[in-house]
Length: 89
Image (cartoon, rainbow, N blue to C red; front, side, top):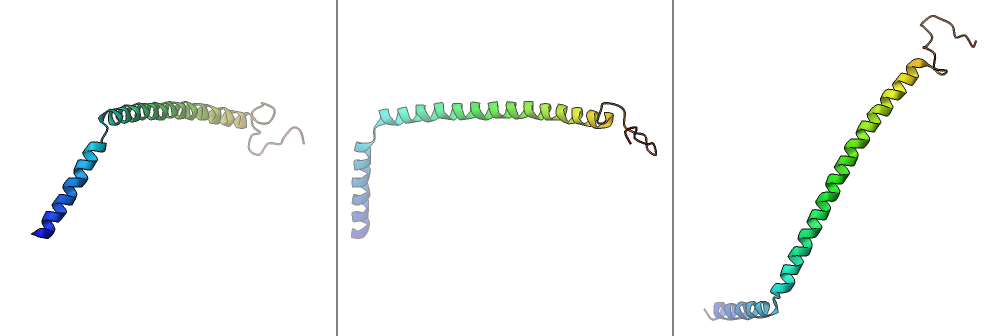
């Protein structure tokens, strides 16, 4: 029983010390700062997602352009039909 009483007194003393040191104003400022930071991070993530989607669209367009250029051949003419000869040879 004495051991529990001493533990209770030590915890009560620590609690009292913590309550005296607690600064409610600083805590509120920290919460506001963290909240603002959270929204900045969320905006940055959203902006990155939008930019990623834009770049994916641009990549698809470029791939399509490359495929069309490959189909036209080196000088922009249609590809040599299978079995046909290249005029430059």
